Each structure stands twice: as structure tokens, then as C-alpha cells.
Amino acid sequence: MTKPIALIAGGGIAGTVAALALERSGWHAHVFEAQPEGSAGHGAWLTVAVNGINALRALGLDPARVLAAGFATPAVSLTNGAGRRLAVTPLGGPTADGTTTTTVRRADLYAALRAAAVERGIPITYGRSLRDFAERPGGVTVTFADGSTAEGDLLVGADGIRSRTREVLDPRGPSPRYLGLLNAGGFTTGPVGADLDRTPGLMHMVFGRRAFFGWAPAPDGSVWWFANPPRKQPARRGEFTPSSWRSHLIDLFAADDSPAAAIIRATPEALGPWNTDDLRRVPVWRSARTVLIGDAAHAVAPSSGQGASMAIEDAVTLGRCLPSPAASSAAPIAEGLGEYERRRRRRVERVVAVGRRNGSGKAAGPIGAAVRDAMLPVVLRLAYRKGDPQAWIFDHGVD
Ligand SMILES: Cc1cc2nc3c(=O)[nH]c(=O)nc-3n(C[C@H](O)[C@H](O)[C@H](O)COP(=O)(O)OP(=O)(O)OC[C@H]3O[C@@H](n4cnc5c(N)ncnc54)[C@H](O)[C@@H]3O)c2cc1C
Image (tube, rainbow, N blue to C red; front, side, top):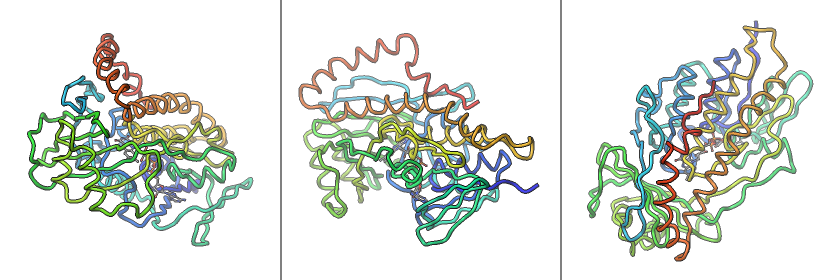
């Protein structure tokens, strides 16, 4: 029996995991990635939460292998710019088998997922950007920016927050909006000229006076960090040179009682700036043979620490919802896509709302900061009294 063909636009997290999930459900998956091989998009590193890790396990992948280059980060400490600790809260896990939220370089995560796909015989074609597609009763035809085409039974739009698949699917749908926060990140290479709390697994987040800063001590002695400077206008391409960007960041944290400036000084290259964008509710996720997953369907703000995990959960659920043609007489694809949306929409929209709330606290003015410093410890203590209020996020199983 010939396998039906799933064309996947985007070889990031959602697209690569969807390819693995669909292949497991009896499809022949083919990933088309716009960027050349080796690229890993925006952001230096990211945390993959326990729920995302568990979803990978449901595909028969060994999380210890996929995340081998990362390290466990089960908790986060929150301090203000004056160095006062406001709270320490869990970031998810450990689950019964010891899994905890894990921090990994973005490039390493992409490479590990792509290697798993290639190991299972899934083709990934790089430098192929979806420009258009057309559905007909028997299939879907995708046209790429270089004029080439591909034919399949299903198109999965996993092409990220600026999804072209989404635009073609619903030209009146929402476009991303800038949220008023820039992003930077990096890795130290030399000694940091400041005392650091190197408790293994403890991530640190600082509500600095002028910008938000996060850092984690890696097992190899380096420090991984990110910064979120608030700014009304998005950064323009070429606006900063690598050196002016690094100096700007050091300056933003100079007045804080935190190791932020020292950590950036110990980093030869500050990556970014990247703009933080948001996407209003996407009303149309699917048609008869096309479906959106990951950031293409719902951009979860970086502050939620859940974008990657939602992308993984989407992809695994999609595989589960689409009938295995080998095992059954193939229920219509459209029905499977409807089931996928029913299982995913409510959950991701709740998580998007959490991410939006977390992000807004990063850019507080002096009055907002004073209220936050007074209230946050109390609010968190009350919220955690009856257990982890985020358990509904972390404990979710794709089954
Ligand atoms: C600075 C930053 C920090 C973040 N930190 C975290 C974090 O700590 N934890 C977390 O869980 N999430 C984090 N996120 C969010 C997370 O990165 C995303 O939610 C996640 O990458 C979504 O995966 P995706 O596969 O849907 O999209 P992406 O990872 O963006 O992948 C989309 C892929 O599609 C490709 N593509 C685009 N257009 C086309 C096209 N037309 N044709 C073919 N291919 C195309 C792109 O090149 C890309 O490879 C962060 C995001 C940012 C920007």
C-alpha cells in the first residue's frame, strides 16, 4: 500500500516533530525548510518544559538523547534590580521518572530533532520556502519561492510566527504585532567578574531597573543568559552593530545590583536584537487538507517558556489524530484535522494568555515595580499553597 504524503512547511521544532509523528502514524513525511542547513532561528537557548519532553517520549524518542546537550533547570529564582530575592518557584518536574524542565541551545535542539528525523528516513529539503498552495479534491500542491512544486495529500504549516501558510489559508487572519520588548541572548566564554550563585538547576531572573535579565549556570562553567529591554519601537535591521548592541546591554544593567552587566562583559558576542511579537487569536487553523501547528497557529510569548513545548504537543497530537492508513480504511483527513483542533485549541489559548501576562511584568515602571516587589512574594506564596498552580500546564499528557 502506498503511504499518503504529508508536505511539511518549516523544519523548526513543530515541523520536525510533526514529521516524526506522522511517519509513526503511517505517513510519508517530507520537510521543506526555508533556511539553509544548520540555521536555528531566533534565540540563543530555550527551556523545554516537562510537558514538551513527555510528548517527545510519546513518539518513541529518548529525551535524554534529544536534549543531551542541555541541562536540567527545575526551578527559577526571581530577584529585583536591588538584588532582593522575591521568590523561588518551580519550572516543572521532576515527574515520576525524574524528568525535569531542561535548558538547551536552540541550535542543538534543532540539530537533534532533525537528526532523529533523518535517522527514520524522513527527507528534509533545505532552502525551500513555501510561497503558495492550492487544494484540489485528491490532494494539495505546494509552490515554493524558487518556482518548484510538490504534491501531497496533506500540507502542515509549521512555518513559524510569520507563517506564509497561515496567510494563504486565511488572508484576512491576524498578523504578528510587536509587544514592546527586545530580546538578546548569549553564552559567557571567560570568567565572570562577579559572585554568582551556581546552584545546579537554578535559573535566575532579575527585574532590573531598566530591563529584564535571565541567566543559568551551565555544568561546563559557562553562563547562559538572555535580556529583554523594553522599547516602544521594534529594532530595525542594521540598527545596532554587534559591538554597539553589547555596549547598549551592559549600559542598561549597569545600575542594577545583579551580575547582569558582568555576565554580558564576559560574553564576546551578544546575540540579537530580536523583536518579541505576539499574534492575536488565529481563527482558521485548517481546511480540508491543510493545517497549522506551532507558532504558525498560536505564538506563545517567550516569557511563558512553553512555545517549544506547545509546538511539540501540537505535532504529536496531529500524528495521533490522523488515521494510520496502514491500520484502518482511512477516515477522512479533514475529520482528523478537526479532532486535532478540538484537542489543542483551548489548551494553547490558555497558555498564550499566561505568556502574555508574564511578559507584561517585565516592562514595569517605577510604581509598577514597587507594587510588583511588594505583591509578588505574597501572590506566589498564596498561589503555591495548594500545589503548583501551573500543574495543568506541566502535567498535561498528549494521550
Ligand atoms: C528569543 C526567544 C526566546 C524563546 N524562548 C523560549 C523558551 O525558553 N522556551 C520555549 O518553549 N519557547 C521559547 N520561545 C518560543 C519558541 O522558540 C517557539 O515557540 C518555537 O520555536 C515554535 O516552534 P515552531 O517550529 O512553530 O517555529 P520555529 O521554531 O520558528 O520554526 C519555524 C521554521 O519554519 C521555517 N520557515 C519559515 N517560513 C517558511 C516557509 N515559507 N517555508 C518553509 N519554511 C519556513 C523557519 O525557517 C523555521 O525553521 C522563544 C522564542 C524567542 C523568539
